[in-house]
Image (cartoon, rainbow, N blue to C red):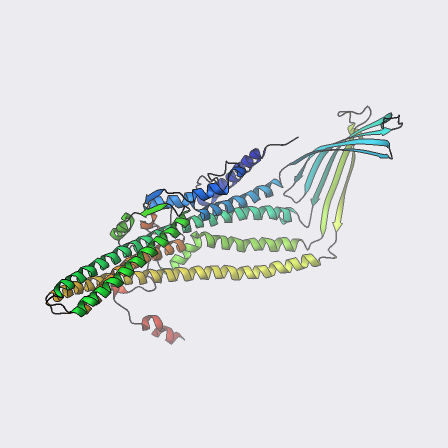
Length: 568
């Protein structure tokens, strides 16, 4: 009578929800991964988890020297945002379990005891016990079967000091069956309750797709943040090297100021040295601040020490700049077939069509078959003394003519308006993705060309620095010229680093928009998921492609072609 423990109900809910997710995930992706929302706190009594424990936990002094794959593991394990997304999927599947439960046998058992009387006299007492089962049918109908046991005592006397006098007993046991089934409005899949179940199932499909897409976006975001930090880290080193270079120049000029170097050159060098010192300090502080932000993204305490391995950036330099060789229209068609957000938008467009059909069905007249049958026990009363020949039954038709359908009319018209809105929403989603893919291809080519420019620029500036250092020692130039070349050199070094990071970020974002990136592969940021996916007809230059890296005149991009002008 007390029911099962709360722990039993939790485990039961988890089993059902995890099974739902596993089954639907297998249908969508052809495979499934172990899914759980458990955390280190899940098996503990909430009353035992105190704020002091959480405060001390955030003051952890652990150290992590990580490469990118380890950073991804930390993020998946500890990220608060990632955990929230998992819980949203769990709750959506939990809602489906409730919707399915509505269409499963609903067992019930209850008992009601009452006393009634006047003043101090008890006149009657009764106990009504009931047990049975009911079932919603996917045809839109409902069926219930119950057994009722009614015990009644009438008290006919009352002795002193005893509120209960002698009485007569009555015991009645009744088996009853009730059926209701619509024939017109609300039949089968047009029943709003059946539609609610269908929509709940569709919502889990959408939630699994959304979570799958989120997992890819999350992994790409961690990779982008990681490489951005490595770029900042390299810039910090460049700034420190520049400071040391200017410090050496100041010492050199101070040593020569005794006989040949001008005092103004020493002051200029000292001023540049202090500027470089400030640039180093500021860049170091910016890196450490961004590193703390990255810790929050990973979900680890900010107090922990985190050191990023440079090997991933070096590996990226070795790999070069892998291209995304896909025609922009072919890329859009690939995204339509593979990107989870687009697939969800298309299916939601189909959902509203079902809503229109159901709203139109509600305008029909209602015609229901209703029936019931009951059989009561006979004397001597017990649970088995029934005479089938005395069964009572009724069956009939219940007609609801459509003389007042204003609410249904308004709902139907509203679904048509919503459908028009859904058309606009779907076309906007498609246009936004087409724009993102076209822009992604342009951005990727832009970053590639910028990278080539940065490499060439660094080579030129490095030669200029080497020459100015020689000329300064020979007394054939002044420090202002050398300082300018130093400034250009540090800017070119940092620009090359950031352009390299910008390229890999643009490439990963484009592959993400195409819906082809596979973040479950080892070092997925170096993989080419399009290698075996495209045929020759789907390959082509990007919208900003410069053949042989030679600049194309602007009119090629800015003006209509001669043939197009003639056609208009």
